[in-house]
Structures are given as structure tokens and as C-alpha cells.
Image 1 (cartoon, rainbow, N blue to C red):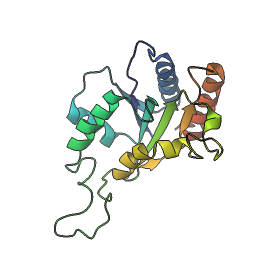
Image 2 (cartoon, one colour):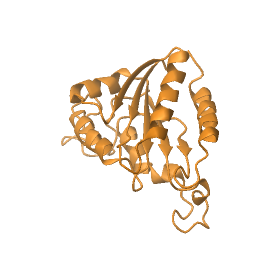
Image 3 (spheres, rainbow, N blue to C red):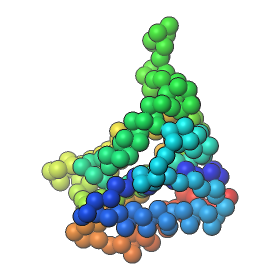
Length: 197
């Protein structure tokens, strides 16, 4: 893994200007660069060209997604990005449709990915506290994990044939933030997954 495509999916709101996601993004890019990785980036504030974004996915060994969790998913601007970039990439650049053909509809759905051997990592910021996940006694998530919550995003990357790296999450970022601890955990997480070339 030498080439990393970094995406900051944060959408700025008055109540959430995105400082934490911006800080985590900068820390990630600094980590990657200092250890010899080549990095290309896109933020949702950028004007982007669909073909160039598809080419960044093809170029990268790893797609690193930094995103807040908005209403149990990614922000609308990144969903729009996916609807355009990922849909246009179904022409064989990211996947060959869903893997099936009219001539052979027996192939399994979701097997058309053309980015095999590439990986992705999710780095998420949540208002929910950590103890609300993976505990059947917590009524809202009912024992589900953060990766369960983000299963649709995992499936999007799996649709392209990509494999996951360990997800990182900062919890309770609005009501009970532990930012310095999160930064330290993040540094360790990156070092485990991206130790250098």
C-alpha cells in the first residue's frame, strides 16, 4: 500500500463546523506523508470532476474516508458524491455493473467490482457514546456495532471488490468529548494500519 486517496466527507453546519473531522483529516494526511505514502485528497467543499474522482479511486491502494455520522449515515453531500461518482464508475472503471449479465443472470449480485486488492478505511465521528454500541442492553442500537450501523457503506466498497481495514471511531463528540484521547487512539490506529513503506 503506497497510494492513499483521502476523502473528508464532512458537510459544514452552523452547529457543527467540522473542526474535529478537519483535524483528524490533517493528522491522517500528515501520518501518511511522513511515512512515505503518496496522498491525494477530496473534500465535499471541493469542486470535483467525476472522471477525476473515479481515477483517484483507481489510482489508490487505499481509500480513507473521514466522515461524521449524520442521522446514522454519511452527510448528504457525500451521498451526492457517491450517487454521481460511483454510478458513473459502474461502466467498468469501479465495477462492471452488479456482476451479472443478461446472458448469465446466475452470477451472484455484487460481484462486478474491478478494484480487487484495494482496501478502504472508515474514520467516523459520532455524537453517540461508545457504550451505546455492541451492548444488547442498550435499547437504541440493540447490540449492533458501529460497523453494523455503517454496513451499507461497507457494502458500497465491497461492491467495487475492496476489502476493509479496521474502522476508527470518535464517540460522544458533542456532549462528552475526549478529543486528546481520541487523537492519541487515532495515532495508534494509523500506526497499526499504516506503519510506513
